[in-house]
Length: 454
Ligand code: SF4
Image (cartoon, helix red, strand yellow):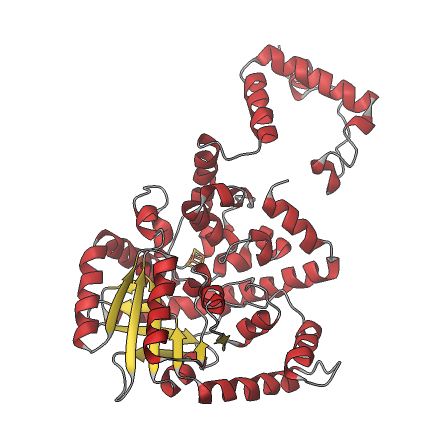
């Protein structure tokens, strides 16, 4: 069984949790709709954002060089990393150079993609995630299940148990206020002691060499303002040409992500404060390859709002862990096959192709079309199950021959009528979740010829 299907089965085994997950994300989607419809010119804003991103991708080298030059002029040390390993080594070198032991990190999907925490842990260095949801999943040794709401698969009872185990809170106390206060006290202590803060980057501005980090908890600011060293990590697609473009993207990001008019903290970093050291690591990790794929380069326009996750009927009902990659959902299904096609060949098939993802995407990425195109690439490169391949070949053969098609239809109806158990059994994956339809007495063609034909 394909990995996504098998992992989804685990998630949906808990029916009440699946319903609740589905409803919670749909609630976020509805908040997004309300916020989007409340802003006049929403569609023009999407179009503008899409055009800015298209222009930036077509002039990427120019803007990245401009950003590097400006950032260096502001006193920031700029590093380039070809892949996740190089990214991790750069950060490790900075840690070693300063002999640092206490590290805090705010939410950065790039560091998840590069497996930074695991890499540093392997070197005996612990990183404390300071986003509340990230800290919860870090305690539980789980990856985030959503790029904006990392612990959305968990209920307050799960959080209570986790905090009781790791923060010694009262057993069975599920009060959100109480749990949040416990996390606050715990994290405040980590911030005060931290020597190094790692943050992500939402937007890097070529014109100024500065960057913007958006959080609702202020944890990126707390880390960056208390630690002596700040490292910001960004995938190279985070670049935008001008500061005025932030007015377009910040309005789209918050509304698309959570339905807020503006993210609580949109912090602008331009240079290190006196006595602090600031680094920025610009990472490729497969992005150049994706840029070179004509049908898929558009995916680099993504601003990581997760609107496509919240609307996707498959994601809402299968949970983020079923995608077995750092970035789940429809977005993960179009970027991960590029990174490792063999490991992620199942993901483009984890979709109904309903197009709701493309419909909500604030930068107009043709997500569902890319999913459909990835399926073709995956099949052409031989990464589908032998059973599926054989089945599809058989189907293509039958569909190409009208006589054969009519004969197969007749045989199929006869088998389903005479030996229904051959189809309606647990070995048939299709039957597991569905009732088989009642078998018609005749085909549509026969009916048509009798009633409408000559
Ligand atoms: S693909 Fe579009 S909708 Fe999905 S996370 Fe990226 S910007 Fe948001």
